[in-house]
Length: 319
Picture 1: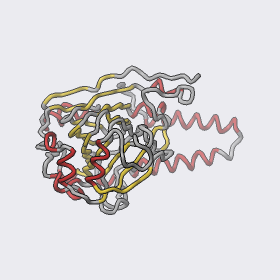
Picture 2: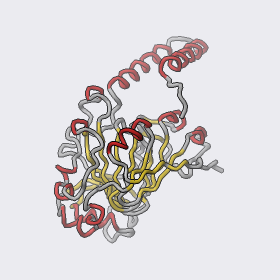
Picture 3: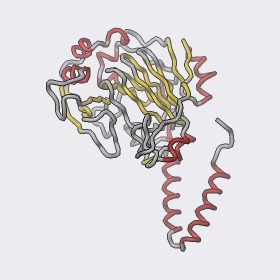
Picture 4: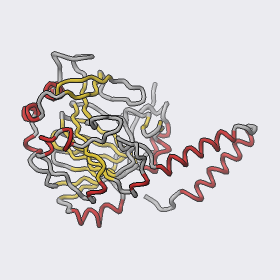
């Protein structure tokens, strides 16, 4: 029998009516996820019904993810990409059972907006969904030149996105519907079974602990976002998002490091900073060099490398 279980969650801190100055002075330096309530988001929280969304942006074509199962896996690609008129997509995403479908009558839909050229252009709701952009006030708790992207998202009820980290700070603005978000500190990366920026552990509520035994060591943070809530997700914090209802959200990412730190070819905001990429490449070359030694020597010098990294690069503070 498979060993299963999940860690007890620590509630994410909540703050009512956090002004920009208070956020930057008291919350931002802590580098911890925080739910901001009472932020003025404009008319979107009441206007963005299924009928309004369908009419506002009409029948322009959108590329969407379609999954036959609730837990989407970006590593195994257990979903397909399809194209639908936006108004048709919105109505389908809001349904539980579908009369028209691609894979199954209970398939899940997910839209993540992209730029005009997905490989080069950055997502910006003002460009891809200009009518809807007029309804939302983006909380600009950062300087205008730091802005990177604003991503429009629509999810079917029950859809769960894979656990991953982003390299920029961001706000997850829950405009309509309800989401549950599970988060893990960057410090717990050793327990998350990473493949690039993503965790192999798909079901964070019922993980297979025979396959992923270290996962129990990861400290789990959790919150539920209601319509109008804004979740601050600091860079490098892992997060898995479960849509408990059909909902619409907007992610806003900004560059909190100097602009030259980021890969200029990064249209999605998920490429590691340039210095980190170079360091990982150097490490890969060092590990390949160790393969020239017998096993006993490889083990010894690999442990010395780990100690050197701990001495030179690890932070010593707690939390």
